[in-house]
Length: 320
Image 1 (cartoon, helix red, strand yellow):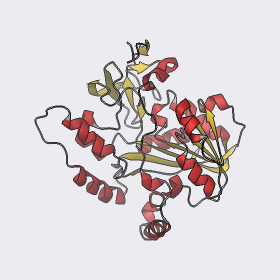
Image 2 (cartoon, helix red, strand yellow; image 1 turned 90 degrees about the vertical axis):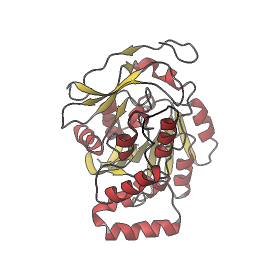
Image 3 (cartoon, one colour; image 1 turned 180 degrees about the horizontal axis):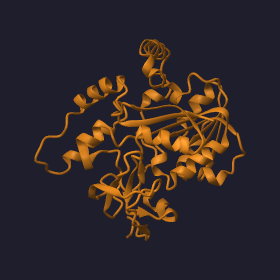
Image 4 (cartoon, helix red, strand yellow; image 1 turned 90 degrees about the horizontal axis):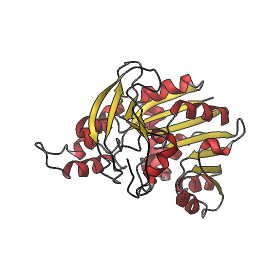
């Protein structure tokens, strides 16, 4: 198999779950990269162990060759939910009021600063920081902000921001000391990681006692996936190696020795994930009309209000 620039890439069959060893059921066959045109065909499997719920790409690119799938790929488009960044003062007040009234949804509603707005400023690490915009905003409100990214161009761009530190490579390359950070965020990152459990264990090692980890990733049980199927933007074969439901993120946290604070799904109304899914749907003739994006967004808003895990993103808040 070769990439667009003719570099060979190795793959291996992955019919069994990485985490529990159960056989995976094929949900989608012969998926292609319709966004950035990496060659090859891929399947999406779901673990048949009902207590596991892991989804994964099969065959799987070899870890040493994964970087080759990103040669024509801009790794840091706006796929995250902007509401989880830095909202206006008025919007933050509204959300704090809503969190008091809808107490069962409190953690999900307090989404500003990627769910860190209730923590005092401290040492922050953003894994997959991209061009560093989020880190720069956090530095302005008092955080000691550090970022990591494997995309060299993004790292160069991020280093133009004043007041933040940005490193190139993986989190394992950095060899951070134990208890180095008070908060660690991963937004649309964990799905790209070849060994998610190893990542969770490393996150725990470098998190300070009482610190917080925040993970946001596409939710394979979302209404978008159920409606758009193989055209759902969150699949993104072959770069999305694994997909996680909120329950799966929580289970991984426990397995790594972290203490889950909350796991839930979040809407993706402003992220573009449903809009891009609709565009992918229209690229090929189909016998039925495209799902209605506006209707799906409204349904998500209603269903997630009652903690039904059908939003476009899975979110985990955990501590050490």
